[in-house]
Length: 244
Image (cartoon, rainbow, N blue to C red; front, top):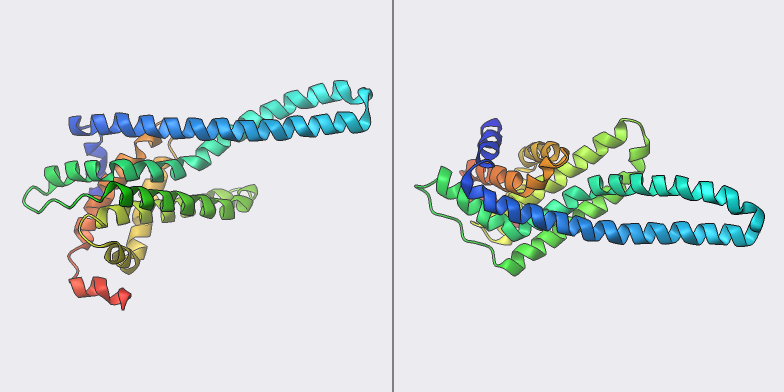
């Protein structure tokens, strides 16, 4: 597993990955910008509506305190958006990975496994569907984990575990679907769930690094291509067993 992670990290700096990195990082920034603007407008509307209601209910005497409150809320709003961007990054990278998963996997397989057959690219629609499903799953998991963030220390652990589960699952299935049907890829993931979860911790650690995490689709996909190669030595009937 460490060898697979090192190979993925090393290949991030290769010329073949540069164009993919630019495209995936650009798309991730664009998606984050749209989410940022939408979230800002919602929070700003809630802030202004609350202040207007309070001023109308209390009267002009509340104007000066409300001015101070507006500044404090603006600061809180900025902090909330920054925190939201951190939480949304794994969701965004899950979606972005679906657009570039086959391009990344193709580079990895050609460089590290030249003697083996190259995987079959997923149809773009299927890849996008899987990416959207992964992003929605990540959002649901994080919303469930959110209440624990108010518990010092424990919340961060919950978030890290949730990220490891979602990203490990997402990137492994995208890598496996190049060689197996959707059902078989999911069965293989369930069969190796603990190994894939531990591998997901590497990706969770990577996505927690600001700026660097824009390369998460490249690292996560390259890493899971290596992991799939190592786990695919099991007999095919073992993959089909969970489907019965």
